[in-house]
Each structure stands twice: as C-alpha cells, then as structure tokens.
Length: 162
Image (cartoon, rainbow, N blue to C red):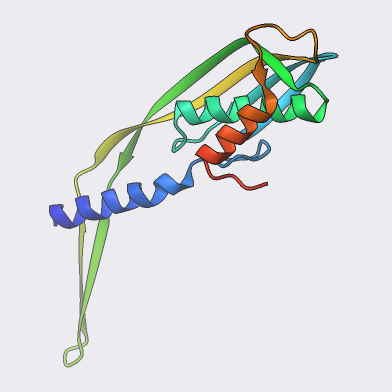
C-alpha cells in the first residue's frame, strides 16, 4: 500500500508542476498587475501560485515591466526597487482507497476502505513587486536595462510565444 501511495503522490506532484502560474494578467491563480505611478514610472507585481518558483515570479515581473516600457516608447528602464515575498503553508495529503466485493450468490456486499498515513508538505507562494522607471535616448543611465533584450531573453527562457 505504501509504495503505491508514494508513487501516486509523486506522480501528482510531478503532474502538477506544470500547473505553475503562466504569464498572464492577474486572475484567481496569480498573474501580473501594474499601476502607473508617474509619467514614466510603474509599480509591477507578479503573484505566483504554489507551483511557481520565486525566480519565475521575478522574471515575469521584469518581463511585464519591460513590456510596459516598450508599449510606452521607453526603450530602456531601471528598477528603482524590488522585493519578493513568500508565504509558506503546511499542506497535509492522504489517500483513501475503497474496494467493493459483491457476492452474487448471497447478495452480500463487503466494502474495504483504507486510508494512508497523512504526509505533510510545505507549499510556498511567491509574490514579486518592482518599481521601474523608463528612459529614452540620450538620457539613459548607465545601469539601465534594454526593454527588447529583457523581453527576448525571458520569453526564450520560458518559451512564451507572442
């Protein structure tokens, strides 16, 4: 029973690893949101679900910032501030298996139910917030990032199509 449970548990975990928050606008399962703070300054947030890594939330917040800057004709930007917060919760998993045996001669039904011992795991949700400021030539600071380079590299890394 235990080997079957652990195989099923890890199969579920591996299968759900593909359920990380995708790059999309904020919804029930996470995503990005942004707020205009000044003419060329935005606050950008990317919230992941329990299957989204902290590094992915940082990349997606940076990608959204680059897209905003590009859409507003700022080919360069700097990150004024950034932070990733994490909320961790313990989640308990168990599996119940039920077998039914029906004796057709006597009409007796026997049900066997077994529940595996609970397994506790930690699920972490990451949320990245950045404040960015856009720039045009020739007033580009030395530490500025190229919007096009950021967009290209992050979309390639996560295989995001336009």
